[in-house]
Length: 79
Image (tube, rainbow, N blue to C red; front, side, top):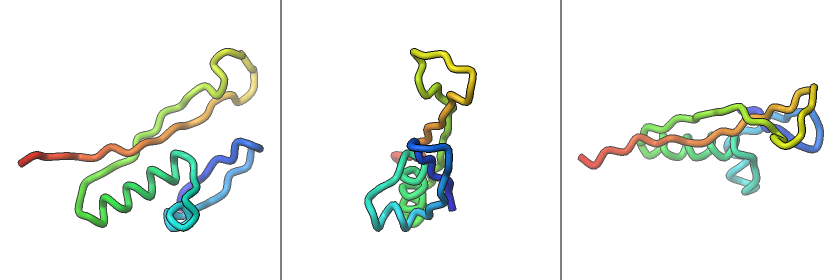
């Protein structure tokens, strides 16, 4: 299971890759998890990478103005 951030409020929900596949919806984290699962099922090595980002880099806030972004990295060999 993975955590899915809901930008409309500060709560998170738990969603498995099957939810993203069934609904065609999901932020970067559930999409990356689904893609990784698909690569692994095909025997291809893949992993998730995550960075912390400012939610609004133009406005300074003293609260929690950080978010996360994730993506998939795939190992590819031509041999």
